[in-house]
Length: 255
Image (cartoon, rainbow, N blue to C red):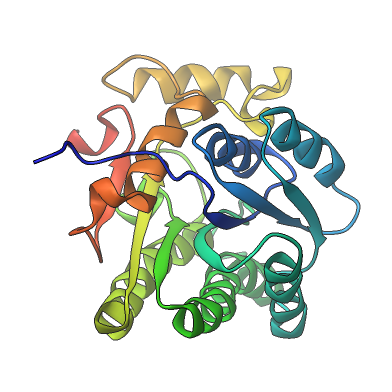
């Protein structure tokens, strides 16, 4: 029996949140593992840079300016991917936002915005992607959650963010059970503290030291370290894996 393959050669993928941070690195990482990639993010981001980086790997890419809270824009984006790249087989939903406020003072508008992007946006993305995959015979979806869906981070006032990411984990399980008999696997990956541009600013240096102290491995993850877990779940190597959350946190949740 041959060893399972982690390659995703010539499969067509879409990545939301592809303009920056983890989403950008995942779009490039999927291309490095053989996929053609539709790169989706809000208009005004650096989608062109992501597309150029994907194309440098020798794979094809298309920029998809769209808002994950708009189902019509997501439907159009998926149609554009299938028109320009081919039948959709893989999806990674990494679009998300974060901010903080004390729970007792948080305006409902702030709560609603984070839930709308981080949770409803993931559901709407999955919905648009699955419609295409169901027509085409199946596929694999990975949603980017967070270890903050499992724990409440020390010192961070983000009840809305934590709730949204817990929701991403559970909606992934729910969709996995709904679509498993029609050829779609759905999983989530929960990153820990990761060295994205947001966490590399000088003004948050003290907080970064706390993040590193709270992590058994003693450091934050690089965005590169999210590629392997996501590619594994997308690939045939994970053909019997659905409805799971893979925590990639350097051991934080052990404590």
